[in-house]
Length: 464
Ligand code: NAD
View 1 (spheres, rainbow, N blue to C red):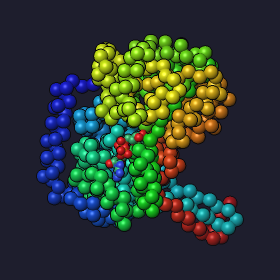
View 2 (cartoon, rainbow, N blue to C red; view 1 turned 135 degrees about the vertical axis):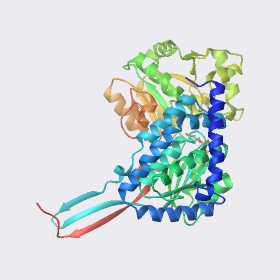
View 3 (cartoon, protein in one colour; view 1 turned 180 degrees about the horizontal axis):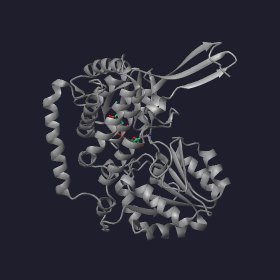
């Protein structure tokens, strides 16, 4: 349930009052600094202090972050929707719970040991030092929680630079995380940012000689920029996840999963189903069952054409004004009024339809029919476009699933569930909101933000 506008207004007012109080307390350090250089110097000093502390204290810091972000979850979720105009309040709340509770902590850097005829070898995961993290407009709270926990658990400090259109929410979240760290006995400046992040400060973060590693969560251009930086860089880029449904699938369940997965947060998760590819034989049933969820509106061909003209520009780009909006808002623009219960609009599309190929990030989902599963796999691989991000399949045929997974080579491959199961929401495994497809680290966690060190003890400590 989305809160009423007056509740949202009250929540935001509360956050703003606390923000002003935070400004007053900045003399003690609230994680925000006037310049990138100040943030970097604070981060370096804080990281030195962190590695001088016990692992038990590091665990306390992580626990404090988890608890404190959960305590302000509703306020910050409301603020994110209000500031960015993207996504849904209740899904932002879920995102933050997921990041606070399912991001691995210090246990993720447990050392490995091997003993043999020549003695003992110990492999330890050491910090990289100071990390620069660029965070996206789509997840201004979740990415900060997720990155902070993972990077600090690995013994690092981090300088964040948020998307310019999400600075109020991001800097507020940073202040909350910073206070949680300091309250747990951690160092001032362990997470930091400039007070007003923008593209110029992002460039400074990328180029700063004292930042050892860069992490970019965003579109392909920023991933390419950090990869060209000459530093160790982790790129978590865009996706265009296809969902393939074959003739052996449990169709009603597939319909429910797709309706839910594609609509979460109005489609702005990078993992959301962005186009349905369905074997002809079961296409009608799939569409009927999606409608029967009561949350999916089927656009007629004429309506679909109007919506396409609205959300796709003449030069085949997504019209940013409709990214992350509720389906009612989008359809209203072309004169279609639907009830509040709807979360998604679907339409039958030809294979070359722009919304099949573009990452639309809105609750408008094309459905493409294919002759058989072989054609479906070939087409899905093409529309994923080598992002190596996410793919979903509904099938009860092990060989079909194996063939698709092998062909598409995505970082996340979800079988018989909604896309978000792949990030740990109703599926096994940890969560990450920095899914590194382009650079191959996968669902990042503390271990990703480390350098490996081997320690060898020769001819001792083999005791069997
Ligand atoms: P974006 O690429 O516009 O921005 C991401 C970050 O990079 C922001 O902090 C932004 O300020 C910075 N940035 C962008 N261009 C820059 C430039 N030229 N110089 C310096 N900094 C620059 O992405 P977005 O619109 O904020 O987020 C949506 C995109 O992110 C989607 O494509 C989505 O799929 C992707 N995403 C990926 C993941 C993942 O884990 N792989 C997670 C969330 C979002």
